Each structure stands twice: as structure tokens, then as C-alpha cells.
Length: 247
Image 1 (cartoon, rainbow, N blue to C red):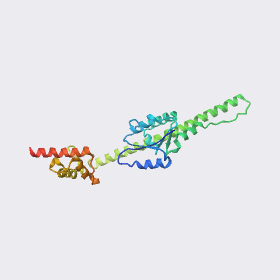
Image 2 (image 1 turned 30 degrees about the horizontal axis):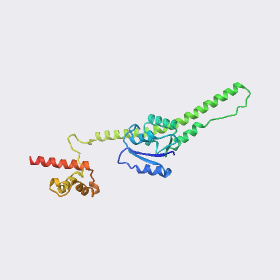
Image 3 (image 1 turned 90 degrees about the vertical axis):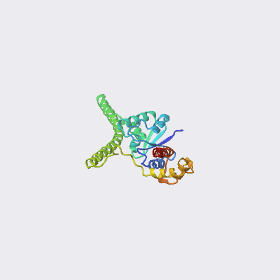
Image 4 (image 1 turned 180 degrees about the vertical axis):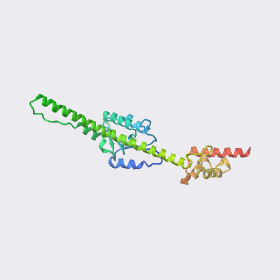
């Protein structure tokens, strides 16, 4: 049985991927949703997409919220499109339905067929030549529509990068600090409250609770949520501080 994959990608963890999921499931409720958080413009290295590409077969479908979710690099995006099209994979782009593979296929299959009734061979050859050129043009036009869609996706991300660079340069010229000052440690607002809880409750510092119990207390306050690795890092920081104080 052919499968339908809904591929959802966001560039940063701050973006909400669920909008893409809802859009896909509203039209393809049976789709297998694949989520991916990835920052970059090349489809190579997008781990979850590569997993789909490795197992997908002819007749399967991949649904994207938009062409930019597949690739924002025009050359690589169109190359991947053609590879999947030749493989018999259906591609659906919810915001650019005019370049779905089924639409592309229909355009390629359009042929101008005219009944040539002239008894003159020269006239017949002339008409056939016109038809061949016209059909070739229609195929090129269909292909160009897809190329333009990927080029537009690349232009959008290029424009965004340019605006970001210009904004940074403007801020720099206005005397604003860009990035972190050399030698200055990055301050996390929740770091100190978490360290206070660790120092107050952990057995290591004279408290009565095990590490997992201290973590549970910290995570009972949503804005102080901490993972185990960060917890032990903060705990090690406290231990080093105490050692220095006792020297």
C-alpha cells in the first residue's frame, strides 16, 4: 500500500511547527507526519527528510506545506524534484499546487495533435515541425514553473539574510553592542534561582534530598525547568565555588 508522508520543517526551535502539521492533516489526514528542526538551506543533512528519501518508493507521496520546506536552494531543490518525479514519487506543495508532480505530469502529457489533411508533403512537414516546436515549448514552460518556485524560495531566504546583515551593520554604526563582549560571561536569568535550590536541598551541600528529588522541585516551576545535564553542570559549579572558598 502506498504511503503518504507529511514533512514539516522549521529553521529554529522558536518557530511553531504545528501550523504545518495542521495544514497537511487537514487535506491528508492519513499522512505520516515527520517533524524536523533544522537551520540551513541545503536539503543534504536534513536527517528526517533523508530517512524518507531512503525508503520511499514509486507511488508514495510526500506532502510539504510549501516548496521552501523541501529546499530553499533553487538548483538542489529542482534536482531533487526531478529525481523523485523520475522515481514515480508524488510531491504535493500546499501553497504552490501548480507545481505538484501530478500537475507537472499533466502539463508534460499535453500534446498538440492536429489532423493534417493537406496533400502537399512540404506543407505537412511544415505543420509537423510547428507542432513539435510547440510541444517542446509547453514542456519547457512546465519545467520553468517549478524552477521559478524554487528560485523564489531561495530569494526569500537570501533577502532575509541581507536584511539581517544590514540591520546588524546599522546597529553597529549607531554604537550598539553586537553579540557578547569579549571576556563577558553569558548570564542566564534562571541560573541563580536553580543554584539556590540545589544548594538548599541537595545532600551534597547539607540538604536532605537526592539529585532526582531536587530536579523534581526545580521542574515544578515551569520557568525554571532544567534538564539533567544542566542540573549537574550547575551543581559542579557550586562545588568548585565552595572548594575555592575553603582553600
